[in-house]
Length: 578
Image (cartoon, rainbow, N blue to C red; front, top):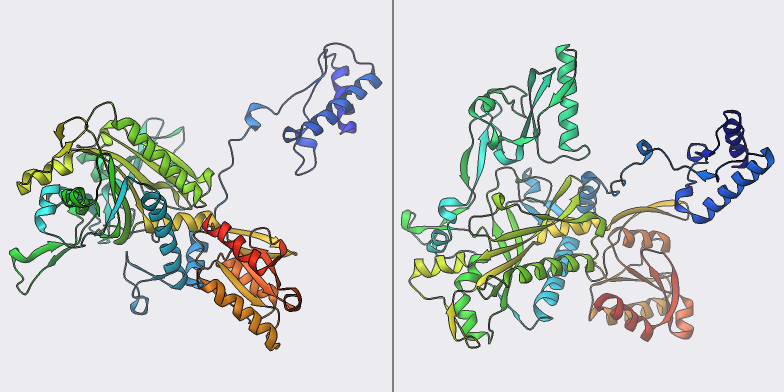
């Protein structure tokens, strides 16, 4: 540092500069960042002052100049595993399998293996405990997957639950029109061509991919001049003339995409022995309507009063046009929803809405999601459903981009009003405090179990080095970990050691899902448990036989400590159950 400061000082003195400004960032060793250490900055200031004294430089006080504005980079994006790594781990360790894989798979459907079942169950149990059991104003419900078709006619799903779809006439592939984006590329104001791209892909952003495609098109056309591209829009925003010029993502040829048309997402089935118009029914596309149609039943039996909520966890089905990104968007999925009923006063819904947004956000952090991957997205008025007053999504940065993880909508009283009108039954609530009758309004915090599970896996996946060896691990919160602890006898050829280890295993098994493993070296067994996210490994060794203590190893830090068996049980209860 002093050598380079001296060189800079000499240069400043020679040039007659009265105020010496030194930029040392480019000359420092790799990993040496003075901006992050006050101590380092003090050393550098002292070095420059000594150089100035040696060279008898006078004038204004010496200063350290920060890096030029161009060198100040935006915060680096968070490090994430690729989708390929996550999918590979899920298959290899028994979290998630492609449905009907033996027959080549079935698009949009997935099966959950031994560890996946446990992880999903723990996510649902944590949600139910925190949002139902720990609240006095929320009760539960489990409504049927198939209900009267009249429910879906009243809610508007039969006529309006659809997505815009376009077909590629040449490749026969189908796309959601609002997830197919395009831009117009020009060179010096002259049309170069149109570019299309799909919403989700790992790596570059859509803007970067569009720019790269435009530059490639410019080189191919051998055009000179300034290249510009229009802001990205989805296919539904294109005029008829533009639609004819936008190429298909499958073929790259313009004119092969059909105009958008509505595609109903509900799965249709038949109920009963006859198969005619009277037997048509639907698999539910959401769990919310079962809550609305049971509002009066819960009100009369649940000993509740407004404001209160009804919670439900259950399967839903949507015939997605383009299921994608693993379990993020599939055709069979599970929802965790609350319909929270509030008074209709105009001055109260905002506070309830914000409260549920914040509760949802805090809960996601509490189960181990990385805070730097979470954000909020407030829907602008023109993108709200016609009945909604407001909607805010909690967003999550997946390997394929930032997408909705959880939604919280202020739905008004649309659903209850629709079902009252269609059924001819009153769904009014009588408020004892105000002596008024009204139809309550609703705040709806809604989570997708599968989508949340993918976020949990993304947050938990990590790689590091232990003892010079690279390891992969899942840093699950202990509440969510599929296996809470593994009991590992140090050796398997000592009967007294095995008996002690089995006794500890059976004791813990009464309360938690734990594993017993005697196969392989102890280090290899640790690595196996790290990769499936087991937070604690309990080693039973010869010292255990003498003083009834065990070695407890922490997954994340790999630190080990000795505990008595009674202390072990108490420690696990605190870490897992809080």
